[in-house]
Each structure stands twice: as C-alpha cells, then as structure tokens.
Picture (cartoon, rainbow, N blue to C red):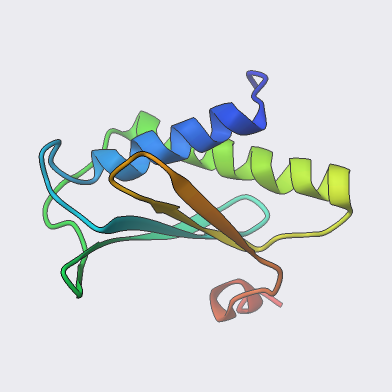
Length: 117
C-alpha cells in the first residue's frame, strides 16, 4: 500500500466527492457519508442546494476512484485508532464551494455493519 498522510486522504476524499457531480454544478455543500467495515465500505453522496438535497444521477466513477476512496478512508480509520485509540465506524465529509471542508466521525456501528454479528 502506498504511504498516505491525513492531508492526502482529505484531498482524495474531496476529489472523489466532487467527481460525482458536473464541474460547474452549483451547491451549498456536498456530503459523502461512508460506513467502514473490516474490509468494505458503503457510501452515499448528497448535494445540498437552496434547501434541496439530491443524489447524483447516472454518473459512474472509475473503479480506481472507489479503490482510492477506500484506501483514504481506511487510512483515516487506522490513523485515528493509532493516534487516539478510538475506533471509527464511519465518517461524514462535507465540502463547501470555497473548498473548505468538515469531517465528522461516527464511533458506533451502523445497522449495516451489525448484520454480520
């Protein structure tokens, strides 16, 4: 696995989130919600604009983008576990039009992840 740092992981996530939409598409914020399992992820992408939330329609990303996203998400999970000793089970990455972002971590397993228990 290629070495990564936190800033690179954030950059990968922001780029892949943006790639779900057309380059000139306007938005108030974009959100990527990721649930993190042992070897799998599940994601949802949302665009928020003028009080309306929508998901991208018909835009498929290359397989490599999915692999890059998983690599970035697993890096953040492992890095947080190593530096804070806290296990995350998901994250919400919010991107704003000025390229600023916010990231919130989920510390409880989702129902999707609890299915295998």
